[in-house]
Length: 69
Image 1: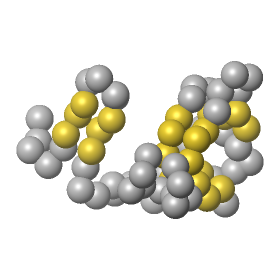
Image 2: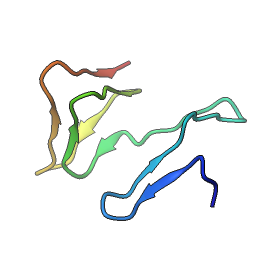
Image 3: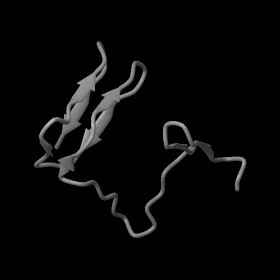
Image 4: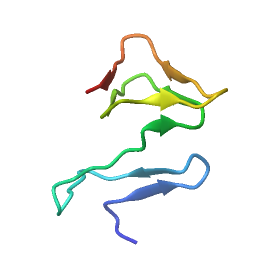
């Protein structure tokens, strides 16, 4: 446990002041398998192509962005 990290066991969110990939790669799945909301005050990005599984949805709060590159 580092005081620089915060883990919320209710949401599963891990908060850190900075993400560093020592190998130069950040990896994301090509499928969104559960519902997700990009909350107010946040933005998101994914490297595509991206699909959503049957029954899954991504909700983007007003004024926020989800960018797929």
